[in-house]
Length: 85
Image (cartoon, rainbow, N blue to C red):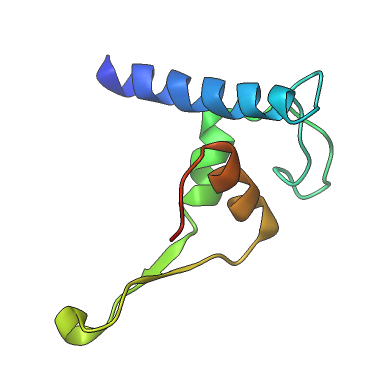
């Protein structure tokens, strides 16, 4: 039950942020290979964020680095208000 609540809240956060940023229908491109405008679902949000890679060094001497390989990942992190610094 808790997982479903988290799933719904993430989807809601992204859709509201899109509307706040000027997308009246809450749609975005980049979620699917053909770049059609769709409302983001939590499944697609997790799919794209699941491809993120966190690089760490032995001994934790240097800060961890998040490797973002696609623009949609950065856009989703921004919509979720996740600070990368």
